[in-house]
Image 1 (cartoon, helix red, strand yellow):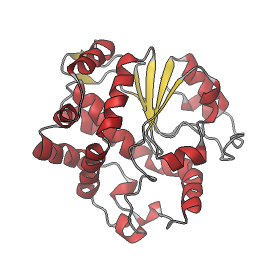
Image 2: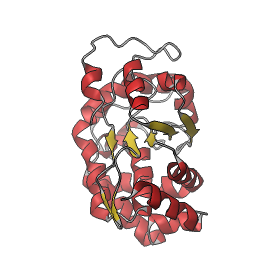
Image 3: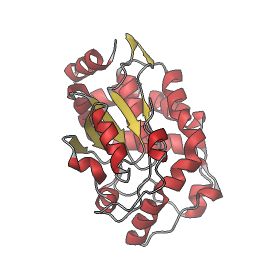
Image 4: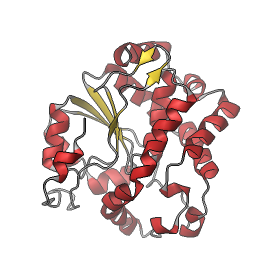
Amino acid sequence: MTFTDSARSSQNHPADADSGLPTSPLANWRDLGGLTVSEGTVRERVLWRSDDVSTIPEGEARRLHETGLSDVLDLRSPHEAQVAGRGPLRRYPVGYHHLPLSATAAAPGMSPAAVSSLTPEGVGTWYVQIAEQTAPQLITGLRVAASASGAALFHCAAGKDRTGVFTAAVLGVLGADDEVIIEDYARTDAVMPAIMHRISPMMQAVVRDHDAPRLDPAAGGALFAAPAETMATMLRVMRHEHGSIVDLLRDRGLDTATITALRERVVH
């Protein structure tokens, strides 16, 4: 199932009435349904990961709702959420949970030159730092996913970095093997050009408001890609430092009841 094919059939994507940003269909949405975990497979239409839903067309928001969306977990920074808003989904009876996994936009406070030289190992290590610094938000997100009445959609801007960390937490709690987590993450790599084209107006608005240096995806660097090595590094470093991402979250307050509830709701 995809939402983007029918959304792209319309050539007219006006600016969102609230943010003024141009609307466009999602480039990095996918259902985690069918992924293998320790006690079976993930059900369809219960866990969705995505790029930014704040600038989708009205028709795509309607399709998401009609297909079962019940909760949105917004992993963007406070400033990103302020600049782009919630978009057309705010008009639907969908739960909204702002759980920022970064204080600013996704780039880890580096100059353009430093970002362009980032390796997969560097980005993967940064992911571990995100998990360490935002464990309470990750735990809250897991609780929302465990209690949602329909599909829980989690997103950041590109649906790669912060969304990748949260997805690793979800799949880790469900008992997925590293290979499953890595392969799901790496699926984003093929659509990175479309993602960057889609989110560039929003990112430019964020950079302009903060008077920060503008990052150029053409300059390269692992921050603008999703190679398997990045997620493999995160899982390897996490295992060395904490045992696993689940061990880290347990140490920070993740309870057995939440783990059990999530598994019972989303696995068959």
